[in-house]
Structure formats: C-alpha cells, structure tokens
Image: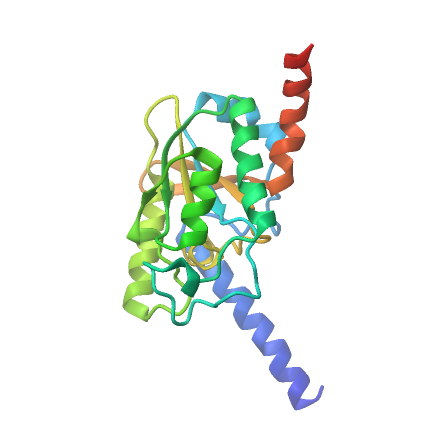
Length: 222
C-alpha cells in the first residue's frame, strides 16, 4: 500500500469511527449498518397517532447561488436558497402530509432562509429556533451546544396526538445522532425514549410522501 492509499484508508476509518461514536452517544446505532430504517408505509399508522419528532433536511437548493460563509440571516440573497424544484418539493410534501392525515403540531426551523422557506411552504407556519442553527463550521463550544440541544428535541415527546417537525441541516443531525441526512429534503422519524434518549425508526425521501398519499387522493376522488 502506498502512503497516499494509507492516508485515504485512514481517513475513511476516522470518519466511520466519528459517526459511530456520535450515534452511540445519542443512544442509537447508525442506520443502514446494523438496523435498516422502515419506510413511510410501515410507520404511517403510528404517525397518524402522533408521538414522533420528524426531522427534515431542507429541500433542494440552488447550488449556483451564494454560499453560507458570509451569510447574513436577515438577507436571504446572501445565503444558499431553495431552488424552484426545492420550493415545489416542500409544497408537495405539505400537501401529502395533510392528505395522509398526519397531525403536525409545532414546526421549528433553523434561522436560515432555506429551512424557514421549507417549513412555510410545507406547513404554512414556522417558529425559528437558534438551537437548529447550521452546525457546520461552528467552534467546539457551539457545536456541543447545538448537538445537545438537538438531542433534547429528539428525545422530548410532543403533546398527545401530534408530531413535532424540525427543519434543519445535515450537519446537525450527524452531530446529534450520527446520521448524515442525504439527499436534500429527506426526513427521519424519531421516537422519543425515556431518560433523554431517542431512536430513529424511519427514513423518508421527498417523493415518498406523494407516493403514499396518491391512493388516499384517488379514493377521495371516487
């Protein structure tokens, strides 16, 4: 093995260990390795009863626009924002969740425009939470705060008969639960557990909501 190959291999090992440690600290295994997550149809009945935290990564963004290095949270034009596709995805997700009769209570989002827009387009409302601020690039103290805050959110049961929605970023979920949320618009369903713990039970792609809602729409039209 060459030195370059060794370095690359070591990098993958370190990355894998970092994810595993984060997942273990959150009281959860890394999905896809030891326990594949359920799909939407499998958990739909439970979601209709409430009791879950639904974590969305914002929907698709326009990669050609400004990055976030110099983002001004008061000016959307200084940030990476939703693309036309992302705006359509968010609206469709919201329509599908309503058609599926999934009760949604609180809707919280990070202060960035792309997360707030995802929430508003999907659910018609949003409360901004600094605890969901983009974790990428944060210093160690702030990273620890954001990680611990998200873990509290994921482990806190919502009011009876509702589900809580969080709209944030991939880096935050990776730090709190060892899950790298891909692609944009993906959702993870978490069940709060006692003693500040939680478990990921399902992974839902943006298009899955509409696919599950289509039979309901067809039946309603008859």
